[in-house]
Figure 1 (tube, rainbow, N blue to C red):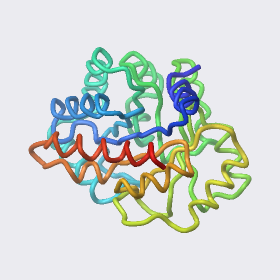
Figure 2: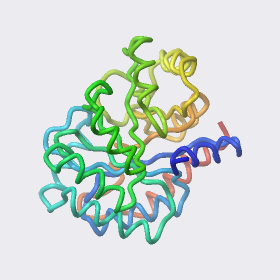
Figure 3: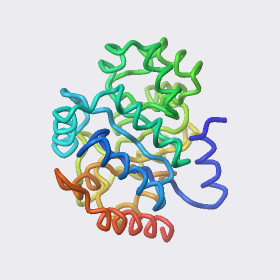
Amino acid sequence: MSRIKQKFKQLKKNNKKAFIPYVTGGYPSLDACERLIEVLAENGADIIEIGIPYSDPLADGPTIQKASQIAISRGANTKNIFGMIKNLKKKIDVPLVIMTYYNTIYRYGEKKFAEEAAYAGVDGLIVPDLPPEEARSWRALAKKNALDTIFLISPTSSDDRIKEIVSASSGFIYCVSLTGVTGARNSMPLELSGFLSKVRSLTDKPLAVGFGISSANLAKEVSRLADGIIIGSALIDLINDSDIKYDKIIKFVKNIKLAMETS
């Protein structure tokens, strides 16, 4: 059983939901990002998603785009993010998931990427622009290297498409809360409950919701419906370009965790 699957099983046994914060790898710097991930793990993150910054993202909104551009300008790349993860695995025991675009994997080389990710200690990957029907070679390499491949489902996915995606996914299913890009929002779509009910009727794999969750209230609302929530932009908004106010981060994370536990 993968560490991600095991984490969801453990949380379910304790009647809890997964809090999955997203950080942009290398933002605002590699050292600061490494410390940020440690702080998130120490304060209740169940799984942590690390984005490899990419210059032409499809799914990321302005906040993550800006963080990615700054990280790239400061030298963040696939190799040194793998190095950061390798360091982190000596200090924390939280499953780590890479979010990246397929061009990054393709240019690095699928086999090399999978092997080095596994060696660094990565537990799974999210590749938003890689559809299941074009992921055969990647999925084979990921499985060989004990990496989960987590596919995204959007509210516009048909029943047949949902069946295809949930069959291909391992670890959990990433349910996109809305049609659009990432970014903190003040409310969730009214259709979210029905969308998740439809996906739930077609799989027993864990469902984690991302895109738009920005506050403890929304975390509480969504964690009533899903097995986990993913927060990226709202967290990155708390990070100053040149500094991280860890007290603000810790307060934010603890408020999110408390809201989820009382949902």
